[in-house]
Length: 232
Image (cartoon, rainbow, N blue to C red):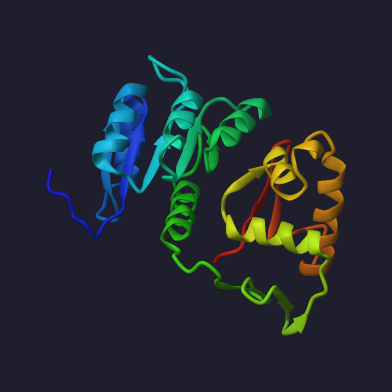
């Protein structure tokens, strides 16, 4: 296979031929270079040899569970991993995301949504500026100056609210679980106190969103966590 070095490399890991064909057909067309693996071991090998820019991973593989694959890859690589699975229980989503997956789509899903998630992951992985200025619609966040503007006016945030916003916006497009956020912002001692997170999310929405009851930026992933949805 001739590999175009300018195209992102996508590794599709699924043992169902019908799903492989569907994904290959949906994603072909010159936007990506596509690779396939049908087992966990093949996926780990391909991650080393192919060096993909994104991995699309099914959880139900014949030789090992997908969550184990995510954990093993995370021992040495931060390549974005999007889970594509028929498992729709919240516990499965949380386990995969806590293991290090970046996103989770439940089968069946729309091609348009998958492509949007892939583009978000590529933007995140290609962003090299350590202290960028994010501009999303009427919201501007200057991470270097710790300055938040909405419609050109400064928004007063508490230190905790700012740290929470920075975490979310720095992982724009990625689902962060409740436990991931609580550990990062408050520490391991607060893992069983999700009300603290809910209160701060509510406060951020009222300060940043046009309509806090219908948030455009900080979106709830029911039972799992939150995603900063804005385009960065």
